[in-house]
Image 1 (cartoon, rainbow, N blue to C red):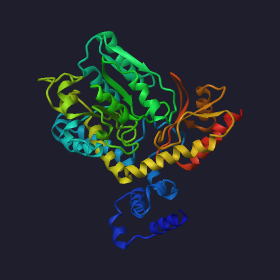
Image 2: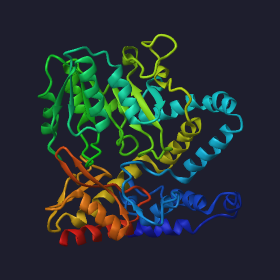
Image 3: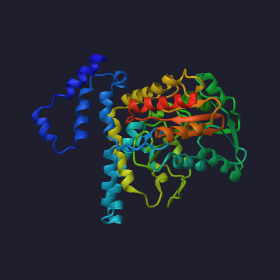
Image 4: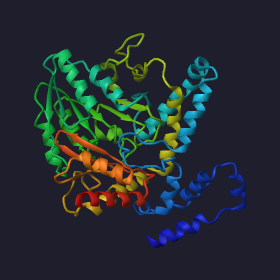
Length: 431
């Protein structure tokens, strides 16, 4: 590791006159990042995860606040500078003549964007719809499924509230039946997690809803195994990928799901209010769109799910810059760094008195999102303590049987930030 660091730093010090002159028009952070990426080429993602000199240059791509340490990236992640600049540029452009530049110019970029999202997702371009967030994508499917009274849907009590509420609305409106499983988390027992869902299936089950990574504590679920069991029984599979897409490496078809939705403003670092819906090609014709189309609502065209009315094209088109930034870092590098950051602080507090970890340290079962509880204290108390005493922004979680504080670092988080977090958690536990 030491030799990697020496080689990395030596590489940063070399820049030819030609390269220097060609880079004068770029801001300093961009030039430095370009050089850092070039010199990290021969370092494995695992080794690079701990290379602070490299990640320093990634951190310079973000405009993080000097007033607080943001460790609630599980809510909404900030966008890097190139994405912020794209939003501003496209917004100014739109306002020169909105109806012309939005509908006739910027809208032309949707198909190339769809193609690039499909490439990252590993699916057919005709299976990707662009929308505003995972709730919109998932509710498109939840309300678009042709379910009737008595049909059953299996989901977990630990799913996201918007999805729970959407299903409950279908219960009230259409008379479907919800079968709720209650997961004891964290868990590294694949058989337990799979069987919680499988044991809830009956001959009336029409769909199963699976959250790929539980937002409350970062638990990764064995989606493919559950999906395979569901498909054996003719059950459709809906996956909430709000926190998984661009967070850790996978391709959507590998999950064996029928429907998948994600919020791109989380781990892809796209502009706030951007999302993506995947619908397996042969399933498109069976789903009613959430917003009506002018022709057949059951047509076999993924674009029928994009009838959102006037939309923020300046946000949508800036997603392309987020894709470029993600690919620049590299999916595996990013995943290894995020997992390293979560485990860094958790390893340092796990043996402290009264501290309980609600997230697995194993990369198979967790990545960036961690959850910690202090025996005898409420999550909100630790949340407030960290902000009041250390200006660290986290979020207290009280949902079903998960009680603790969710802590979510990101690629711009420094080790110094996490050392301060550890100090705060330790002080609170002692107090």
